[in-house]
Amino acid sequence: MIKRLTLPLVTLLLFYSESLFVIFFLKIESFEGRIIVPHFLIIFILFICVFFQYRTALLYAFIFGFLFDIFYTEINGIYLVFYPFVVFLAHAMLKILHNNLFVFSLIVIINLSVLEFLVYQINVIIQRTDMTFIQFADLRLWPTLALNAVFYIIFSYPFKVFLQRKQKQLLED
Image 1: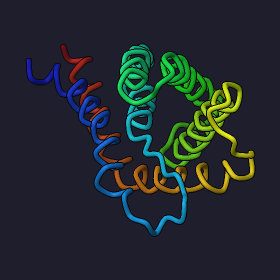
Image 2: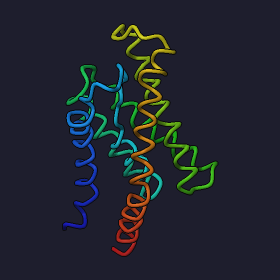
Image 3: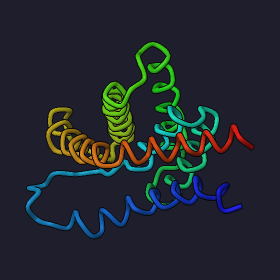
Protein backbone atom coordinates (compact mmCIF):
# COMPACT_ATOMS: atom_id res chain seq x y z
CA MET A 1 0.00 0.00 0.00
CA ILE A 2 2.74 2.45 0.97
CA LYS A 3 4.69 1.58 -2.19
CA ARG A 4 1.75 2.68 -4.34
CA LEU A 5 1.52 6.03 -2.57
CA THR A 6 5.17 7.06 -2.80
CA LEU A 7 4.97 8.47 -6.33
CA PRO A 8 1.89 10.66 -5.68
CA LEU A 9 3.32 11.76 -2.33
CA VAL A 10 6.67 12.75 -3.82
CA THR A 11 4.86 14.65 -6.57
CA LEU A 12 2.65 16.41 -4.03
CA LEU A 13 5.71 17.25 -1.94
CA LEU A 14 7.36 18.86 -4.97
CA PHE A 15 4.13 20.74 -5.74
CA TYR A 16 4.25 22.38 -2.32
CA SER A 17 8.03 22.75 -2.28
CA GLU A 18 7.85 25.28 -5.10
CA SER A 19 5.82 27.72 -3.02
CA LEU A 20 7.92 27.05 0.08
CA PHE A 21 11.07 27.72 -1.92
CA VAL A 22 9.68 31.07 -3.05
CA ILE A 23 8.60 32.00 0.48
CA PHE A 24 11.85 31.09 2.23
CA PHE A 25 14.61 31.60 -0.34
CA LEU A 26 13.49 34.22 -2.82
CA LYS A 27 12.74 37.04 -0.39
CA ILE A 28 16.34 38.17 -0.60
CA GLU A 29 16.73 41.66 -2.07
CA SER A 30 19.97 40.82 -3.90
CA PHE A 31 18.21 39.56 -7.02
CA GLU A 32 17.92 43.10 -8.48
CA GLY A 33 14.36 42.71 -9.74
CA ARG A 34 14.93 39.28 -11.23
CA ILE A 35 11.99 36.88 -11.21
CA ILE A 36 13.07 33.35 -10.37
CA VAL A 37 10.41 30.68 -10.86
CA PRO A 38 11.02 27.18 -9.50
CA HIS A 39 9.66 24.43 -11.76
CA PHE A 40 10.50 21.46 -9.57
CA LEU A 41 7.16 19.79 -10.21
CA ILE A 42 7.30 19.78 -14.01
CA ILE A 43 10.90 18.58 -13.89
CA PHE A 44 9.80 15.60 -11.81
CA ILE A 45 6.85 14.96 -14.12
CA LEU A 46 9.29 14.93 -17.04
CA PHE A 47 11.35 12.38 -15.11
CA ILE A 48 8.19 10.30 -14.73
CA CYS A 49 7.71 10.51 -18.48
CA VAL A 50 11.21 9.29 -19.23
CA PHE A 51 12.00 6.81 -16.46
CA PHE A 52 8.56 5.51 -15.47
CA GLN A 53 5.51 5.79 -17.76
CA TYR A 54 4.39 8.32 -20.33
CA ARG A 55 0.69 7.87 -19.50
CA THR A 56 1.31 8.40 -15.80
CA ALA A 57 3.28 11.55 -16.60
CA LEU A 58 0.42 12.89 -18.73
CA LEU A 59 -2.10 12.14 -15.99
CA TYR A 60 0.06 13.88 -13.37
CA ALA A 61 0.60 16.80 -15.75
CA PHE A 62 -3.16 17.29 -16.14
CA ILE A 63 -3.92 16.88 -12.44
CA PHE A 64 -1.10 19.03 -11.11
CA GLY A 65 -1.48 21.57 -13.91
CA PHE A 66 -5.08 22.01 -12.81
CA LEU A 67 -4.04 22.26 -9.14
CA PHE A 68 -1.30 24.73 -10.05
CA ASP A 69 -3.85 26.91 -11.84
CA ILE A 70 -6.23 26.81 -8.89
CA PHE A 71 -3.64 27.53 -6.19
CA TYR A 72 -1.09 29.80 -7.83
CA THR A 73 -2.47 31.57 -10.89
CA GLU A 74 -5.41 33.83 -11.50
CA ILE A 75 -6.01 32.44 -14.98
CA ASN A 76 -7.36 28.90 -14.97
CA GLY A 77 -6.30 26.58 -17.74
CA ILE A 78 -2.81 27.81 -18.55
CA TYR A 79 -0.86 25.13 -16.75
CA LEU A 80 -3.65 22.59 -17.28
CA VAL A 81 -2.84 22.80 -20.99
CA PHE A 82 0.86 23.64 -20.94
CA TYR A 83 2.07 20.94 -18.51
CA PRO A 84 0.73 18.07 -20.66
CA PHE A 85 2.00 19.85 -23.78
CA VAL A 86 5.52 20.01 -22.32
CA VAL A 87 5.33 16.32 -21.37
CA PHE A 88 4.23 15.49 -24.91
CA LEU A 89 7.08 17.55 -26.34
CA ALA A 90 9.65 15.83 -24.12
CA HIS A 91 8.27 12.42 -25.06
CA ALA A 92 8.48 13.29 -28.76
CA MET A 93 12.06 14.57 -28.38
CA LEU A 94 13.13 11.42 -26.56
CA LYS A 95 11.86 9.25 -29.42
CA ILE A 96 14.44 10.96 -31.62
CA LEU A 97 17.31 11.55 -29.19
CA HIS A 98 19.33 9.12 -27.10
CA ASN A 99 18.06 8.71 -23.55
CA ASN A 100 20.68 9.63 -20.96
CA LEU A 101 20.85 12.22 -18.18
CA PHE A 102 22.90 14.73 -20.19
CA VAL A 103 20.59 14.71 -23.22
CA PHE A 104 17.61 14.71 -20.91
CA SER A 105 19.00 17.80 -19.15
CA LEU A 106 18.98 19.65 -22.47
CA ILE A 107 15.44 18.48 -23.12
CA VAL A 108 14.37 19.71 -19.68
CA ILE A 109 15.97 23.13 -20.27
CA ILE A 110 14.34 23.41 -23.70
CA ASN A 111 10.94 22.41 -22.34
CA LEU A 112 11.19 24.81 -19.41
CA SER A 113 12.05 27.56 -21.89
CA VAL A 114 9.01 26.64 -23.97
CA LEU A 115 6.80 26.62 -20.88
CA GLU A 116 8.06 29.99 -19.69
CA PHE A 117 7.74 31.51 -23.15
CA LEU A 118 4.16 30.25 -23.55
CA VAL A 119 3.15 31.63 -20.15
CA TYR A 120 4.83 34.93 -21.03
CA GLN A 121 2.96 35.09 -24.35
CA ILE A 122 -0.39 34.44 -22.68
CA ASN A 123 0.36 37.22 -20.19
CA VAL A 124 1.25 39.57 -23.06
CA ILE A 125 -1.92 38.69 -24.96
CA ILE A 126 -4.20 39.37 -22.02
CA GLN A 127 -2.10 42.40 -21.05
CA ARG A 128 -1.03 41.21 -17.59
CA THR A 129 2.58 42.18 -18.28
CA ASP A 130 4.29 45.02 -20.08
CA MET A 131 7.72 43.37 -20.29
CA THR A 132 9.39 43.24 -23.66
CA PHE A 133 10.84 39.94 -24.80
CA ILE A 134 14.36 41.14 -23.98
CA GLN A 135 13.27 42.12 -20.47
CA PHE A 136 11.51 38.77 -20.09
CA ALA A 137 14.62 36.87 -21.14
CA ASP A 138 16.91 38.92 -18.89
CA LEU A 139 14.71 39.26 -15.82
CA ARG A 140 12.78 35.98 -15.80
CA LEU A 141 13.91 33.32 -18.31
CA TRP A 142 17.66 33.11 -17.59
CA PRO A 143 17.37 33.22 -13.77
CA THR A 144 14.58 30.63 -13.89
CA LEU A 145 16.60 28.31 -16.12
CA ALA A 146 19.65 28.70 -13.88
CA LEU A 147 17.73 27.79 -10.72
CA ASN A 148 16.06 24.81 -12.35
CA ALA A 149 19.34 23.63 -13.86
CA VAL A 150 20.86 23.57 -10.37
CA PHE A 151 17.80 21.65 -9.13
CA TYR A 152 18.21 19.20 -12.00
CA ILE A 153 21.91 18.69 -11.28
CA ILE A 154 21.25 17.99 -7.60
CA PHE A 155 18.20 15.73 -7.98
CA SER A 156 18.57 14.05 -11.39
CA TYR A 157 20.30 10.91 -10.19
CA PRO A 158 18.06 10.35 -7.11
CA PHE A 159 14.93 10.88 -9.25
CA LYS A 160 16.21 8.48 -11.89
CA VAL A 161 17.00 5.77 -9.37
CA PHE A 162 13.67 6.25 -7.55
CA LEU A 163 11.63 6.04 -10.75
CA GLN A 164 13.57 3.07 -12.10
CA ARG A 165 12.85 1.23 -8.84
CA LYS A 166 9.17 2.15 -9.16
CA GLN A 167 9.22 0.83 -12.74
CA LYS A 168 10.82 -2.40 -11.58
CA GLN A 169 8.22 -2.80 -8.79
CA LEU A 170 5.43 -2.18 -11.29
CA LEU A 171 6.78 -4.88 -13.61
CA GLU A 172 7.14 -7.34 -10.72
CA ASP A 173 3.53 -6.85 -9.56
